[in-house]
Amino acid sequence: MHAHHHDHAAEPGSPIGFTGERVLPDIPEWAWCFQAHLFGYEDLIGRVPAGLRVLDIGCGEGYGAARLAEHFSHVDACDVAADAVAHAASKYRGRNLEFAVSDGTRLPYANATFDVVCSLQVIEHFTGTDEHLTEVARVLKPEGMYYVTTPNITKMGEAEKDNPYHLRDFDAADLNASLSRHFADVKMEGMFYVEDSLRYRAMVRAEERETRLRPRVAGIEKAVKPLPGAIRARLRPALRALAGVKAWPLPEAETARNAILAEDFYAGEPAEESFCLIGVARNPKR
Image (cartoon, rainbow, N blue to C red; front, top):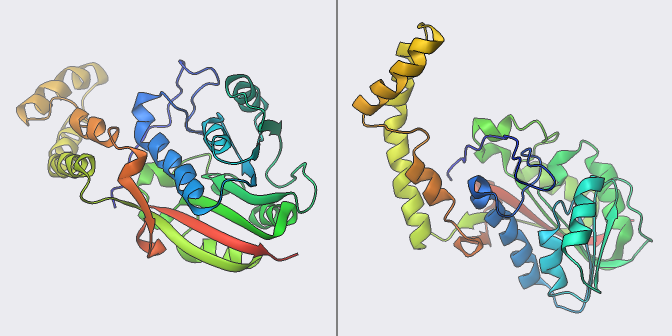
């Protein structure tokens, strides 16, 4: 797996402000991340029949809940951030789609309301995993299903490991154990690349070049580190140009990563080998 290094920089162009906490559509630098999130929603849609009532916890900007509402008979969506919910409710309107402000550990829904509950890249954002799963089990019907995705911490790069918004990291065994405390039937899968995809192959080629050049870039950084800032700023581009690295990170690697689409992923096993874990839990314990 390729660890993807994203800066969690503020993005002024977004109506709800891009901080790296939640994924938004139409942010070019995070297109890869958006497509990976979108895959989760598409994968869920492919697993269950259409005429169901679904809850999307941690809906963020709302694009995923809106996609679910195209397929399912009724979708409720909630998020702890009031600004995100207000934005989602004004942008995505549908008779079968309702947004609410809610903490993932205190859900404002009656017992046994939903056929399916999902939370995509949300469970790592709070420490109260058991409180969250107790609530998920409570609002699910007895034969209901919970679909959860979260980064596999064993496959993450340093930037992801240092994400200030991720308060609880999971590997496959941790997620399996957490789900098994609250559900009778747990299946662990993960997200993988479709290896014969042309977009995936282009990304691999670009990232291999990036890997080859990384030691040169590190060497240049080491050489310029003792110099005063103004000299460093002038010298760094000249030394990089000599080393055959005009810009860093490599623009073509960023471009190739961000050309990836939801269809370039698939769900499979073993979960331990995937960059993103998928838990499918059925039959909630009460």
